[in-house]
Image (cartoon, rainbow, N blue to C red; front, side, top):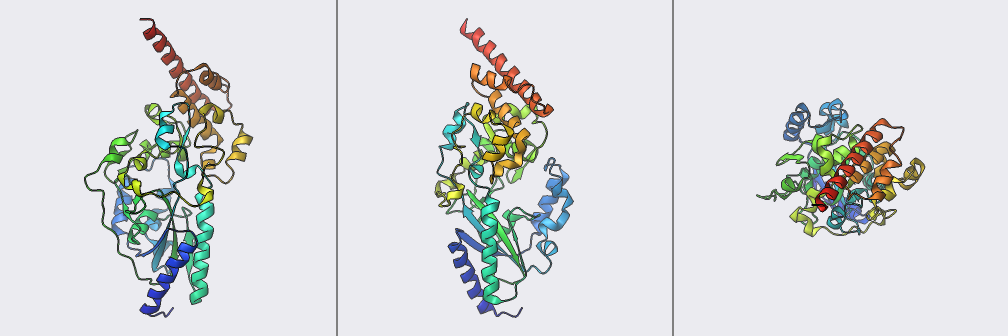
Length: 363
């Protein structure tokens, strides 16, 4: 395709405007050079820090070589969309042991269902403007190093917790990409502004951020409650607290998130009051109710058994009460062995705590 540099620059400006019109807060253009990121990825995989996410190994270097994933790719359009919802206070919910904490990104509609169609519309506008265009849209839908590509596109820097941070918006945003066969003028990556701060490392409940810019997924609550399909290791259960789907602590404590803005997208607002529900209410959901109330939600990824497993752990960490123990008792004969095992752990923990509390109060 023969387009002059001046026309490409003008097109880039148009793409930014179209992106804003489609609800993206920022659009940038970046190179596909990810050599250092590939080396970092290979070291991480070799150390087994991906846990059971074997698909990351199967995809090999496709993740770090966009032109191999989509032949002909010359540049990447990265876009971000804010998702911070108007929800119950996160810290307060985390302190309320009998309430469920759901990661802020999963309170509303599944972001894949919102971002992907809008990126497709953006790509179609580009195609209509210039004619022929080779492209592919990605929103966690293929092996893509989205944070590294967004960094290359000037959308922010990768923080010590490995999330992308933007000086004007913090880190509460989703990312999506369009691989294109256009040599769009690349934006300049921004400087890293984490400095000496280590708030995210210190706050992590399971010490999953083992060093700056290094996360061991096997210790991460988001991995343990979402990607992990088996039992949650006993050593991490107490630290999970009331987090039943994902974890936000490293972002909640990040000083850059004081610049985060509430999302204007209604679809990202909490559904079914998931930002303020009690654990026993959610644990009582039948499978049909779970499927109905998580339709179009990222929470579906955990599956019903994973949902009950996570809730059992959280109930085991709740304040011991007859209500909590009765809720667990009602499902102690659940047909799924993994669910039964976590319920048994929770009941044993709660009963032990009640006995300990009674003994201390009688002294």
